[in-house]
Length: 168
Image (tube, rainbow, N blue to C red; front, side):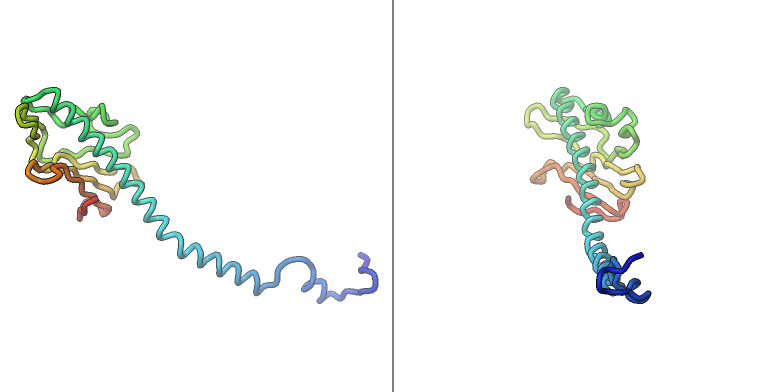
């Protein structure tokens, strides 16, 4: 339409000096944004994996607490590990609802508390919490109990579908 007072614009000037950003500036901005994303995504994914592992650890500790309560209540009598499922957030089959985590039985299917000494007889793997949801299917948390160890309860975690376990 009309040119500014005292100045005429040619077609080239209007294309290069009209509003907007110069191409090198846009490319630099895109490059910097890509660099920031490339640097920040791997740590973020690690944080997400760790948070999901903590979720499984909390379920394992909750189930172990319920198992201990049952063992204390039935002092001297074997208490089935599966008795604690419903009070620890699992259904009777050992799965959360919706199905995200599942309890895989360990070598100890029962736990017995000695009324005299207060020791628990479950010297082996008690259970493993296994991820079954698509976002947690690679996570395993195993609870082992060894009365001679200090502390006797020991959690190990795996983030490779159970191929290797490390203290968690």
